[in-house]
Length: 398
Image (cartoon, rainbow, N blue to C red; front, side):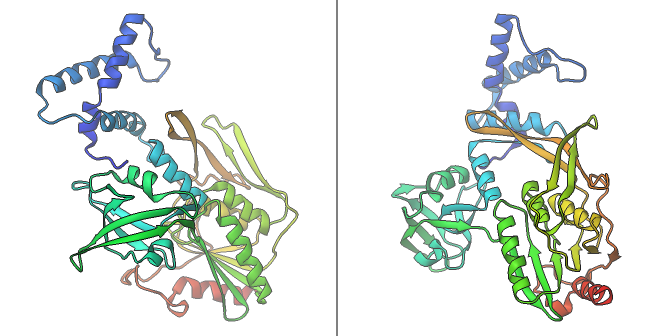
């Protein structure tokens, strides 16, 4: 569900906690503050007062569900950690689909105006269900399966109508502003697999693999790309992790396991320095070719784990600019009704014990991109200064 108006929601949503406060008052028990933990007694008391003010003075109608949502968001937001947050059931379902990279839907990316709740199509997947049916960029949703969706919040719309069993049919009515005309479509839902790995052969027997993010499907896509390039005669590889903000650590470890000899890849430790998880390669498979990894300031998290492990095993050098420096791990904990909180619980360290968090990785060769170029403009291999530097490094060390 799309949300807006943080402070309105946080203040107005006190019905739930005010009631909880009354229960605590009557029962004489409440969570006790220990150490630096939050003392809930004054919190509940103040929220009860705020709710009374809202009941008496607030002009607009309250949205209790929205307000309750922002109470939870506010509590996690108060931790000051941008990587810890609360997700309701719809948001968590969308998060799981993103990480899995595989679901059945209509193959369209949509956006919603937060004020009017108008939902429109941003793009359609090439040869996907929506495109096959005739849906175009800019189309505005009016009805789905005969029901008005013009005031339906985006999360509910996607969960109710956007996702469904393979082969199921979605009846869709849209308004096309460019033609000032309404259209009806029948969309047959299909598996939508997010492609996160792209590869090709470059000159001089050099394979090139770009990984845009680490999702559940990424590891298998990556292995197929490596095998395909080897089959085409690749004798050296450039791995491009620029702009890769990370994702699934398990996926990155699986990919490293495929490339590196068996042994320690990365480990995590909690705030007391106690090791929590140790990730090791153990499949007996490796690909020992000269390699360079392209990185930049937006290479983060799992991308940094992948890069550091390859360099620790002396299987790759890094070219580009210093990486982001996100070396902390989040875990997801259910809190009822399908909602979850995602909390930072540990930090990870490279095979050699280097802490990535707050430090990042310095490249072996620093190469800046032209600051005046349009970052969204297509860039050929010949125009890519960082890729050309990687090719030069491989030719010198080959």
